[in-house]
Amino acid sequence: MTKFDELIRMQAAVQNRSILSLFDMPDRVSQFSAQTGDMLFDFSKTNLDRDTIDALLALIDSANVPARRDAMFAGEKINETEDRAVLHTALRNLDGGPVTVEGVDVMPGVLDTLARMRGFADRVRAGDITDVVNIGIGGSDLGPAMAVRALSPYHDGPRTHFVSNVDGAHISDTLRGLDATTTLVIVASKTFTTIETMTNARTARAWMMENGGDPARQFAALSTAKDKTADFGIDPGQVFGFEDWVGGRYSVWGPIGLSLMIAIGPRGFHAFLRGAQSMDRHFCAASPRENLPMLLAVVGIWHNQICGYATRAVLPYDQRLGLLPDYLQQLEMESNGKSTQIDGTDAPFNTGPVVWGAPGTNGQHAFYQLIHQGTRIIPCEFLIAANGHEPDLTHHHKLLVANCLAQSEALMRGRSLSEASTLMAARGLTGAELDRQARHRVFPGNRPSTTLAYPLLDPFTLGQIIALYEHRVFVEGIILGINSYDQWGVELGKELATSLQPVIDGAQPPTGKDGSTAALVNFIARHAD
Ligand code: F6P
Image 1: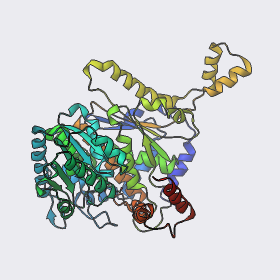
Image 2: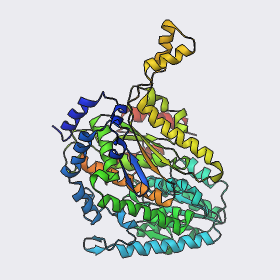
Image 3: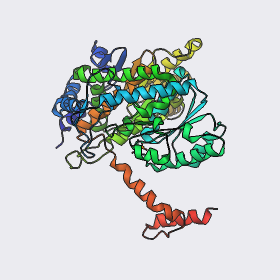
């Protein structure tokens, strides 16, 4: 018995019906969509009806989502396995009043750091820095990297680069061609212990010293560990701290967003925070039926836990949102990819879905074949702006929009055997060959998708979108009974990599390793120069 049994029974009863037929209800679109400001979430192209959406939204109350949400915003320690509050929302609480953690208002510290970031960003933008290199990984990389690319039309600061991988190729390719005397290196690491980031930071420092730069002046750090940034030799005046209640993958709103602030300027960054803050307010105030994060969450639960679709594709029709699928992959999979519930019991159902995707229209010429005609059903989440940023290229944008809407229509509508047969007959085929060829051209259709639409991908809107997904992940986590804010699953690999290092260095034999690992160590050793 699980909390989803009744919904699974309801789904079984309707699973073969046509989504298209649901549009016989004249007000389906208004019933199965919601809006906040100018942002529209359309989930009418799914197999949800009034009964199933009501049953899904009942989970919001039965799982105590409103109480958990209020506890998060109030600074309670809802990250129970790390004994921490979860307050990335405080970073964008620009004029929202005090937020207390253990009786202490955190807002003066947040606003003070933001003001210091603004001063630093203004100085960098006005000075002789030509290039900014952000060194970080996971949440200390993906947020600013995704946002800088997304907001390139607003980028009027120095060029911005991101180095994350410990593979020397990444830093080597990035630094090649940069001027060490005019490059600012930002070391972004909440813990300031992450092996990839610290290795890259040391390499960058050596490069700067060898090439005439001045690390004392040209290094900044973003971290909760000020003792460690000092040990590294970074000027405290160029260290921007934050607290342990900001999770890595939720950290773009504070110091980890410094590279974004330098790229688009403090005003643009302010608008980005304002967008997120407006989504926070919507999340706290709107009824479940109108609440975009809650609706996105229950649609996600419907497709994953109820229908059993194991993955979901994020398909932004926006080239500049090329890193959004990667960003959401970390946000969703590191947050909800767990099998133990908060009370320590095993989850009796599948938890977070596999999240993947790529921008349209490129994906159409790569993996959409499987989405349309493969044997697995993959719910698709489209994102599209009404306007592009290229006034001379509006015909491109119109084509982009047409493709986005055409894909969701095609997924739902499909093409029947008789329609395919008519096409083949028009090409002169007959008999068995007509039938054989027609079968390859059948699209089963009835494949669900949602669309998030908005006027323009500006800083405010990007802030809204990211905050929307953050809250969606949180609501899904509550319904699944898991803590979305820890990430113990990344620890074991880190520990084993540390213990393997002396083995790879040749200082220790692979004693105690399994046969495969020992054989791979030996193969690498034989072939290493
Ligand atoms: O991948 C695990 C993780 O802890 C992420 O959650 C985090 O964003 C990333 O590593 C980087 O950590 P840090 O900012 O401490 O270097």
